[in-house]
Image (cartoon, rainbow over all chains, first blue to last red):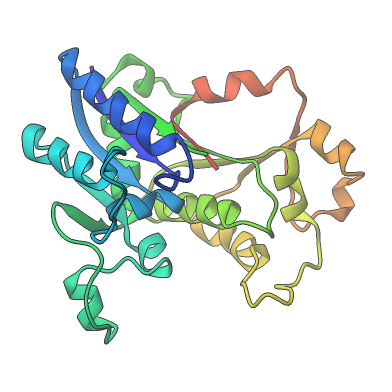
Length: 130
Length: 127
């Protein structure tokens, strides 16, 4: 089955991100297709390049990156929700005159149209929220 | 294309709104998803449940926090051809709201007809 994930919860404040990442891994282990993860609302914080959790806790940002590296799952972040919350890639940082950037590939800033496309294209869109 | 999506009475997207217009960004971000989908030519229905029905109350202002509120967005729905506005009747009653209190014409749905809605849409997003 073709799945997609919509993640709305902030990392570490809520269980949503941990559950979403575990669900993503379980899908792959069962042989399902995961066509994309879309980060919206407070879920955009999962793309924070500078996240530095204690070493004895799961590193969610690295977890998503590994999922992309190993399975090629696109990691799409709503650009409007991200910019409001201080999550900018290099291009947006330059455009807004900010020093430094807080989002890097494989996370990509994109529009909500991608979420709708993803949801309609897949058999199941599973939402993880607070 | 699946059998379900070719059925005539199945619309593209149902956006379920469950939060009030102030105090969090849930409602605004849910409406944004609906507007974007409609702008891309998708057929969108909105369902206001629980506290979200208060977003439809007439005469709302942005308030003191400098946030935009959602009334202006709701006024734009018609422009985006979003005209299926569904409202949980029980929530209206709970908040003491009658239809003349609302800024837009809506379809009231009783509890029994709510469960049918997800099956009538190809995609459901809940905010």
